[in-house]
Length: 148
Figure (cartoon, rainbow, N blue to C red):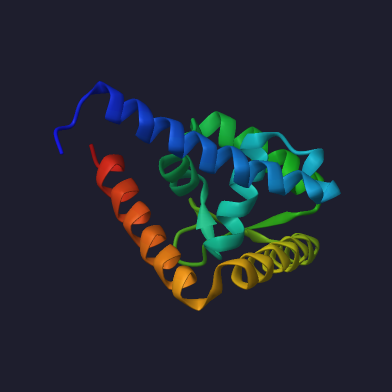
């Protein structure tokens, strides 16, 4: 297949539709409705990366350090995350979910599991395996383009 501008447009359109569909699922959790999109992405990044650092969040999400700091401040005020000085190097502060943050993330996972259960029932095992293979390919694609 020859790559052209129409193909690129279709890929971008598909990525946007996947992203939009996923984001449309998230507001079903009332606590997320009060968060900005950046705060939500940072919260989910922290939740899925255990302990992390401000600069790692900035780098991985492509957000300025000042934006990350403002979002972290709001998440701390809402008692969803906590910070701890790194024992090895006090210049660094580790960030992780608080107990309230973990409860909220578990609520999110429970809702997401319900959706996945519905998808599994609709698709069946064979299609789910193909879907997982597609996710692996999408992840590989995203890693390649993020290095450029």
